[in-house]
Length: 355
Image 1: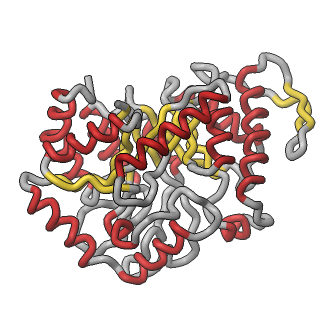
Image 2: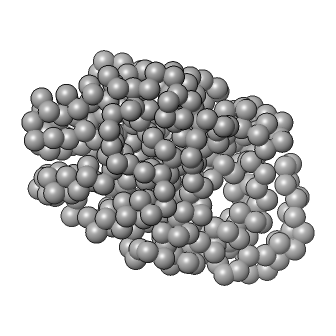
């Protein structure tokens, strides 16, 4: 099972709670998290990107007002690491030239010796386009534009000659990128549960983030959802590995873990949480439509709460659902990561989830 971690590039990370913690959005803190994740054997770390105005998502904590750019952060992390994959979110339609993005990607791939990849996001909320001085683009059309952009970037990564291109949305004369990516192209990732997004993944992606469907039978519904997506992609002649994002709250006893989760909820910043809920469930994206407000006070698309043994049992259920990897996040990143490495990772190895 692939094992990945978000890094907290935004203040508040995934959790709009005022409960005390040492998690920090700065580069130095994220570098420390990444180096330690590599030492523990994580496969990759992942940088989220979002665009918010002054005050971020609001509240006393000004949730996610401070947000580092993951493309630049992963460039810095490449020099500090040797093995771990580094995935950067890029909003590919917010003013990017295919030639410039292909060049940046090839350069970062070269700098990291083939350890860099793109999480391709076509847009989260329509207001983002206005921040960039662009007209909003409808959901499915965004994937149509991104599809052409990716086809052009692939040509630039693979061609040993100048590239000429005349498409519906992009055109180019004598475009060229060198050095070439180490493995032909960077790792390509996207997150979607919509028909257009899954279709895009079938044409381009190596990894696909999926979200759990709303409902009482969490694992049953997730298994059905995951198998349906993989079948759709397989019919298109492609294979993709699916990833899900759980928030880990782990302690020596189940009572302690549940109490910690409740403390996050009880200390939620109410304004930040309300705005986060509207942000996640609003707009025209479908992946988070079933999100619950209290769950967002904790973070992640699902929560794994309990003892180390109970957390691993839940990971085994995800594995049984056909999920190929998990991308974890924590509340108090460094101490939670350390506890996870000490208590949970050995049990994952015993269970056959890790080598």
